[in-house]
Amino acid sequence: MFDVNSMIAANIVAILKKQNRKQIDLAGALQTNKQTISKMLNGSRMINAIELKRIAEFLGVKMEELTKLQGDSVDTDIVHAFMGKVESEEAKEALNIADKLSNMILFHSRVRDNGMAMMKPWEA
Image (cartoon, rainbow, N blue to C red):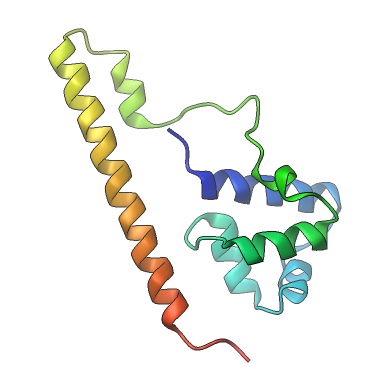
């Protein structure tokens, strides 16, 4: 399991570092504040498609560059770590169910947070 938003954020951070740019520069290009960019890049705020396109334009890269899966990514999910330690099929199935439930909870939490953020008035 991996978090797509975190993967995109990591790609953006890597490109910012490579280009020697700062979050404040990105905030200016997106006409937002540094706090919003910080939330995007630490995973506490979803990055929508329009923002992703603007970020790609600012960085001078294709959107695919921002959404690519890193080849050396390591799965650090705690449930998956335990998956290899249990021996019985029942325990593996229980961990699999727990993994699916936690994914659903996280997904719905992020959808709710994103929906609440979209209901707020636009920043001037």
